[in-house]
Length: 376
Image (tube, rainbow, N blue to C red; front, side, top):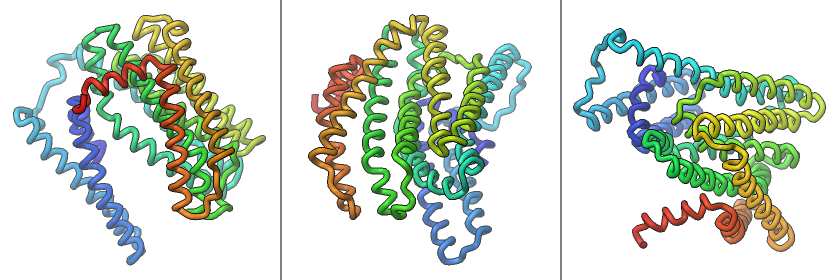
């Protein structure tokens, strides 16, 4: 059902109305999950549980279709058309879709093999341990994706205007925002994720710190990569179909080799290396060379390294202060909340000022917020 009516969602996203999709989707998902929990607890019937997936897919599709008709009353979504009328345009679209398909399916494979490799190279218990951490991270990633969902269409509109100076300015603003979010996620999860798992499931479900660090490095890379992906999509730079395939091969080879040696940490290391080589190194070169038409070293790396330095400095300072003066034993959920307040106060007092000092993009973003603030 989702794939069959996906073009409805695409129209709303392209018109920068993704917030409508998110509100309907989250609302229906919440009701569905509450009903599924009720059925699972009282009836323990899998057929009833899975039937709700279909029922709510239909309900969600009907709601989106109804809203499309209300928002775009002039649009005939049932119209028939003859593709031969503008074959050249459709050929370009089909070519791009084929390229995008390779990228999407490769991404799915690349990030969907960790559990299989952990099962094959370590044991099935380790899959469960990893999934406890991974579930929380997935929910955080989904939340961030919903918050910034409309930026895809905005970036596309920006690139279409072809104001090169403004394009670069907005690019670095988005990078700075992502660094801020990635920093908050990294520090919070590093200090609080294992205590949360211990309170929730028990001490025997906690992973080694080296594994957690590698998981969080991967989360950090995935968080800051989004502006690069947005601008690559806006420029239609999908011809590098070899890149996602290379990422899969690198990921599998390194993960298998080091997975035998280090277990889960080795598999996470494979993901880190493959993402660094393809997403950070190649994708930025491809964007700056073929999209922005600028030198990747002077116009990206020198500025990007400043952001890395800002986060590294802030992380070291926060770790020192937290561990020496603020760290207490976390025995209850109240202790966890208090630890979270301390951690985020340190982030606000240290990381934000450091980012302002190191990042022009963050200063531009702060000025933009001030300019459009109702209190300014």
